[in-house]
Length: 251
Image 1: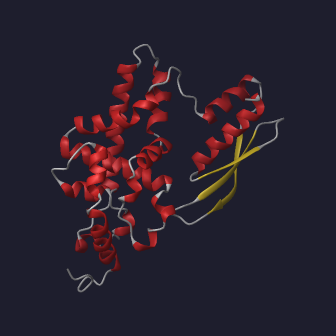
Image 2 (image 1 turned 135 degrees about the horizontal axis):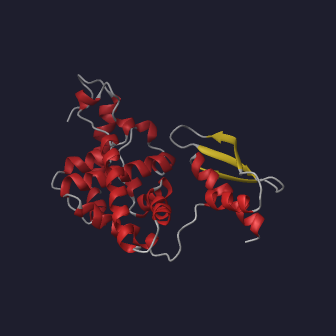
Image 3 (image 1 turned 135 degrees about the vertical axis):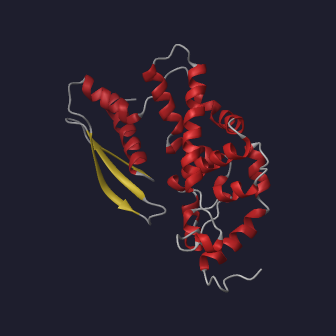
């Protein structure tokens, strides 16, 4: 198949190249998901990074990125997890359920599951995004996994993503206590000590847009600050809060 021509587009060329190199590997991914797609186009879209489909080229090239599926998958994941927790913890209060839910659907949780199923090896990215750092980026992988869940829903109805989610999120639900977000735990500790709320400050922001790195400092009055890094401000803040919590409690 000729590449470029009337399109004259490196985007189209990149798409053809990555499609050829990943087509033979999708069987491994579908096996991990436990679902063969009746409509393979949905899987292709779920694996297509926005970098591969510039706005001006989408109609010409037929390349559709995963953003719309990501939107849908986010809602499907939220519903399935909410219903699951409602059944698993019949005595839990709304607040406890909300904390559990947040810990299961945040970007960190999605990123971990994406790595577990090897999603980074199957993403279709433009040539400039092909660095391994881009493939394992927190935002990229969490967004792509939501898109994959959206594709599962459209291809097979709610039961298909429900099975997938219960398979890979089960271990995270098998805990007796409500998971405590490090930032929430630090805030509650500070309030219990009669201290002002923790203060977070970005002290360094490095890396390209597709693979940023944040260095965050958190302080609580009367205690030495703690510093940590993460691929997003939120992840870095959580890591810093966890470090400071360990310092002030001696655990």
